[in-house]
Length: 458
Ligand code: ADP
Ligand code: G6P
Image (tube, rainbow, N blue to C red; front, top):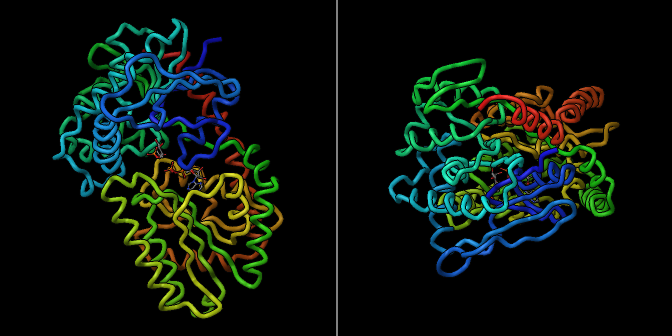
């Protein structure tokens, strides 16, 4: 059997907590197969990026290979291009993209550096699996160094319609780089449709078969592979001492109230201001919810050196403060906004204490929190998931209460319906959702992608 080599910008030590879907999912996927995981160390060093071979470290069956980036490389590749251009555009936010800064050179340089450091570690029959928008040109750089291994790419974030992609000044170069891969995976059918339309209309690729495209003397296969969670691992976390303690504390503190919970990275794609506005609307128009419903929003600090992230924090804090000021009472605070990463072992306790889980991104590749919320519920008395129709997860999780997060009133009404839902309906919806996330879990995702990468295309 071939060795699996996973490459991503961010690496998580599989034994530690991390906020962010990619690291959580890859940690779970690699724990089963073992292999090599290559990425940045997270240390940003003064001056140039580290010369010489990556640092190697064992973590269970996985070998972690990491490189330190220099300050300028990190600024241009990670902050400037990946999170200042690609993240907003792929989340349909052209208004937030900073095209002027011209960080593309740093993006190219770090992708080349990754290829140069990774290539000596590769064996001829390795299966190489590259992840996410930071590393789109990596296969092209590896091929330029003579690598002939099968190389797959998985994009964790959405694919917007072709004319949005075409606003990126270097879009032809960027998307052409996909043809160096043998297989390109995206999260949803909607993403696959957009990618197909881009390849046919903008890249002028030829359609050779179903989801097989020819251009630049290469063939590219594409497919939708919705990512999942490790349901058993999450159930075990939910049973663990720390989650139980969290659950007991919250039950005691909120004995006579109903909890609504949100757990996100603090990112403008997550629709947090819209969520607080919907909650405010509920309190304004349904006085019976006052003193009863409490929203706990945990938002992990994320990418704080990108200006739009500082803006969203200020906006959210202002909105939460105003709701508490206008509706709060001496014995009741409507919103608790907590700006931190909660230990992963405690998170399921918060999910389980909540009558309603709020997952209302304006746009999201998948959203694993939606799946974790379902996995953490007590099947005998489960909470209700309110889910944005613009999360990739909405294609699979039809039994959630699906909402348009831009529609404040409709979202508020869905929250109200969730709070009032009878036990039997909650059970039925939960059972169907649980069945779905079990059938298409993270191991199913990994197996399907790697089987297709091993078999065909190219
Ligand atoms: P993204 O990858 O965009 O952050 P996902 O919902 O797919 O969004 O994945 C987020 C992951 O990070 C989940 O596993 C979730 O439990 C975790 N996470 C998000 N926010 C927090 C937080 N504030 N504290 C702890 N874990 C968090
Ligand atoms: C999303 C992206 C990942 C990223 C994660 C956390 O899940 O798809 O690639 O790792 O967010 O963001 P960060 O910038 O902290 O790695």
